[in-house]
Image (tube, rainbow, N blue to C red):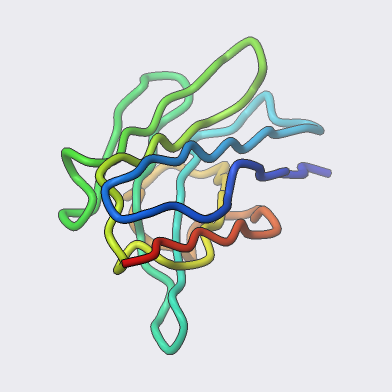
Length: 124
């Protein structure tokens, strides 16, 4: 069974940076894409960023483009989310996710496995 373990969450100040990591284990050889979603209190879960594992295609939400960068380490089977210029509205629980079917990257329902969530809090 695929398991996703997140790390790197925490508290940051406005304008600061954090890097989230998501390490995948188990039978991940056929992973199509990995992505990041977030859910703030009282809001629905929203797409943040994603990449295809083999081709390296990336996609970003408009709200984080030019501030966040998604990347991968193939040897470690790990995806990262580098978050710069953080804003209070970035405060949320961030979830790593993996999917094994091709298609659009922004739909949470199409992802098959999810991490436990990492709290990111940005103070004003």
